[in-house]
Length: 315
Image 1 (tube, rainbow, N blue to C red):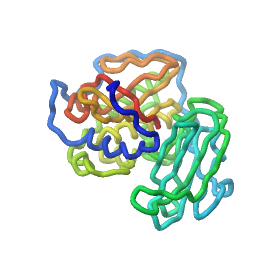
Image 2: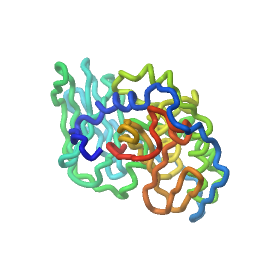
Image 3: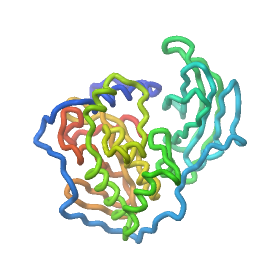
């Protein structure tokens, strides 16, 4: 993996196709079988209380800057998110950049707002809405440059976003609160959610086959909760939405896993306690990996062996 050419940051969403292919259809190739509830699980940490309110910032049209049919709302930037909309007859993208790093998101052309995490930390950001003119060529409709000072570096991973969309009325939020209602500490809340996802969501090989050549797929946490099936992107999206709604910082990560540099999606979590179980080891106050797809499905040609993780993009 060390010899893999460096990919340009603006190509992040082109990797969605690779992600879908990497989680595509295949028969089981390893000795792993779908594991289920932990035989033993130990947690520790300060007392946990369910958040009184679900933190889910919304687009504020009155605060948004407008140009050429596009809008950018940076009013919630200190909380770790930015919103954008556009009305156009062409395909559009929303670029978020800081220094030499950046992410490129598809944005609906019908004026529907998207929420994007400010996952590059505090600093000078460039936000651009662009529309397609021909092939892969895009023209800028609007640009906003903004100095962002996050009130807490964990905030981008405590909010809904384009790949883990939810609000206070979402079914996945209600389910998360139900599961965590009896948690004594954050490790209990984390364990309850992750174990439920692992035990109740089935890897969907038919869906993976159907999406193998698609680009721009966006998971829907409530749909995954309802269908109880999904590919790795769906697992990671649902887990992110449920944990974030409980006040547990959770990253949605895409990258490569062994064997064969398969493109995959998983989560990283951050709690003020611990969770030790057969499959997961989460220590206090540090990011820890949680791969619900592998834990649910075992080793597959398209899921990997649960080893050799290399982060590529963090949402």
